[in-house]
Length: 154
Image (cartoon, rainbow, N blue to C red; front, side, top):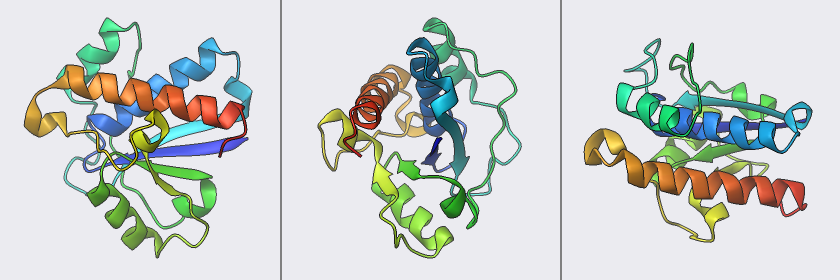
């Protein structure tokens, strides 16, 4: 089983969107037994809060339910539990490495690297208010990630 942990600053917008988009893609592909998918925050400010309403609405527009998800913080032990720790931006990657004590196995990656847009970031819709752009980026990144995982490109 391949463990994927999506990471953003607060775990209420981008990373839960990625978590549930990826779960939906995996389910539609009939691959649910092959993956463990979750999300976490690098900060503590939103811990316990549900997915932000505009992010929930964007997922619901696509027929994706995220009911019951609440923000949790990334912990050092997550590095051992997951095969990939996928950040939305460079700050997420830096903070993930800090919390996990580095990245000796090369597990910490940027989501849009899988959308053939190396180094590009998923802009934080908490600030931009552009949940459609976040949806497009996250969807493309998750599709590329699934393709890479199923074709052996990881």
